[in-house]
Image 1: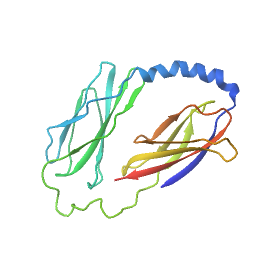
Image 2: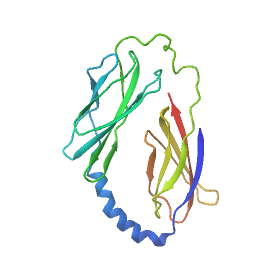
Image 3: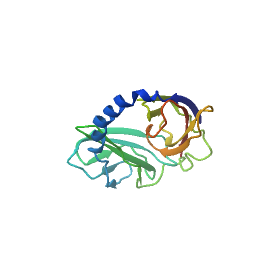
Image 4: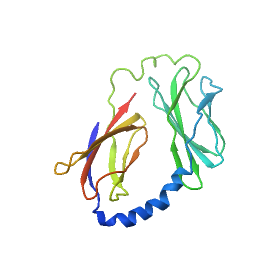
Length: 210
C-alpha cells in the first residue's frame, strides 16, 4: 500500500519567474469558495436527493457518490448548475457518501469533505457482512510530481473506488537537511510550499479503505 517517489526543487535563480507566476495564479483559487451545507433529503430504499449551499460565484458543481462501509462497490458522478442532485440505483439499508466540488469562472473551489447517509429499508439477504473479513486495500498508482518551483511542488497519484483517504509523508533525501511533514486528504493531489531551493525530497502515499 506504499509507493515512494523523489523530487528535486530547482535552484534559487528561478525565484523571480515563479513569484510572478504565483502572484497571478493564486487569487483565482481564493475567488472560488468551497461548497458548504451538504445535506441529504428524500432518502428512499434505492435513491436519495443530495443538497448543498450555492454561492453566486459558483457556475457548476461536480458531484461524486461512493459506497460506504459494508456496502458493495458503487461510484457515480454528475455535474449540475443547481444546488441539488438525485442519485438512483442504491441498495436498501446501505451506507453511502458524497462530496461536491464547485467550479467558478476562475478555477475551482476544491472538493468538500465526504458526507455520509444510509438508505431506508433492509439490506438484501446475503450482503450483511459485505466489506468485513479483511479484504486487501489496493495500492495507489501513478505517483507524480508537477509544477515544481524553488519552494514548492504539486504531488499527485491515482486512487481507486475502494480508497476513502490518503496519508502522505514528505521527507528529505539522505544527503539533505532533515525535513518531515505528513498530511491526510481524500483528494488525489496536494500542493506543497515552504520547501528549500535546490534540495531533494521524497514522498510516499498510504491509502486507507473501509
